Image 1 (cartoon, rainbow, N blue to C red):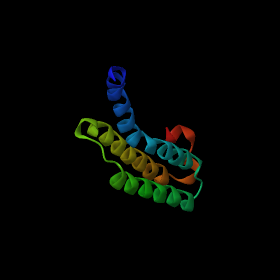
Image 2: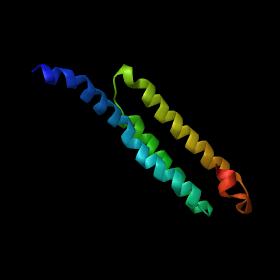
Image 3: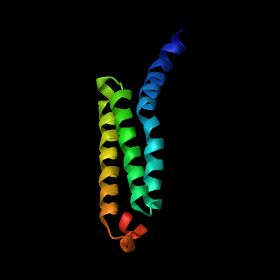
Image 4: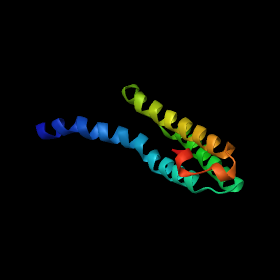
Length: 102
């Protein structure tokens, strides 16, 4: 019983972090899609995916207060990717290079 009590906090932390970090895979894919986007409909699709993910995060992340900082980090990263999408979308097509997107 004692070994179980020693690993329980570690397992609990891993479960709580997984609730948050599972969204990062989708966020990474959206970022890649933004870099590969060539026209307005591609950018619109990326925006729609960001909206879907943000909504999913809004209703799908329930963590204790001690893990809120990681939840806020995720929300901050979502906002950052959205701003990056809007910046790249605003550039003329001939200026959308990897250099400008970094």
